[in-house]
Length: 215
Length: 215
DNA sequence: TGTTACAAGATTGGATACAATCTTCACATG
DNA sequence: CATGTGAAGATTGTATCCAATCTTGTAACA
Image (tube, rainbow over all chains, first blue to last red; front, side, top):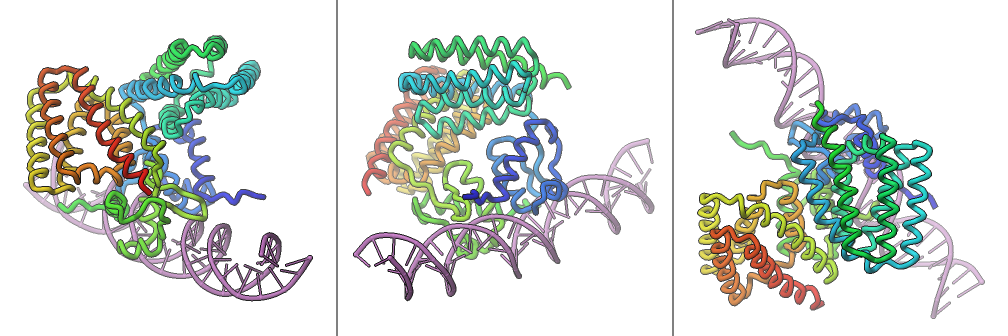
């Protein structure tokens, strides 16, 4: 029954965590030898995982010089969020009319998880549940390629997003927005749903851009 | 002075050609050993190139079973073109107002290449020049991530697009559309440019979907 | 002082070898 | 006849080793 998982998949998951948590700092070179050793694998699966991250823009690659953790400029950030708005608007526009009552119930369940995590100040649990909520909504569009692109854009800023959930006022604000959004979804109100998702995005872009600007 | 190019980059380029030309047929498994041998490299750089193509959706990957050339369904095709329209509209909306007179001259130069290639019935030259034309326009947006996403969507259907340029009537039609578009660009008419690009896309989606449906 | 040249070390790129897994097919079993 | 079993072969996954390239530091030189 054990899902025979390959090392490259394991390594990829671990790299995502290392990047999102900031343990691998933006701009820093990835020393393959030592990182592979610390992950307990050889360089081959590590390199394949890095290639995936390169495709997502999480790391950059320079032949014969190696992989470097991507360093987002404010311009990059603005571009990522602009792309997100194009893609997410479409996912919502297509998906909301297709939502079943069961889908909505499922979304409400996830929201309860988000709020429980928020109450116990568990930042990583909030991040995970928040992500589940939004992608459950996007997936209602039945457009897997579109969802994958949105996922990539989220990943591109994951390393910075943690700060948003760190502040309690942001958490309260977020919960309120989520509840409002559920109402719009229940009413199958496409335009309002899009507007709420946009407002949600704008909040985080302004916070994240502050973080990036600082150094 | 020789640009020391890595094998993975060379292999990646060659794989793109093999897929676009249909030499690697949709659905077919990629046998790494024989393909690597026929490309004159070992499996390591081949696998890294395949990981890039996986990220672009050009091949699919199943652990312990290998890589398979992606097989587009009509639904996939529709989704790819819908995504293209979202992204390309934005690139044009942002880029057209930024076009300099030199940019327009450059675009006209490329159009001459397209028409020369069309006149000499060189399908692959038409494909290449046509692509240069559209991406020169998209790049005016100064949004590199956006352009990269559009590129991915084009690549996803490249294996099928050749048929569009094979027919002489399509070529004549295309040239006319390009000339009309240049006029709109000169007038910096954003909405008309978007509409023309959309019409352009619609033509090819209908042709390509016929090809896919056949088997 | 500033600049170039060059060697030593660090790091990446790729070939080979072997281990792990999957697929196929013959054969036994109910 | 359908179905399960189990080896043999095919194919992929990863570790290791060496070659190629880049980086760094030192020293010679103008």
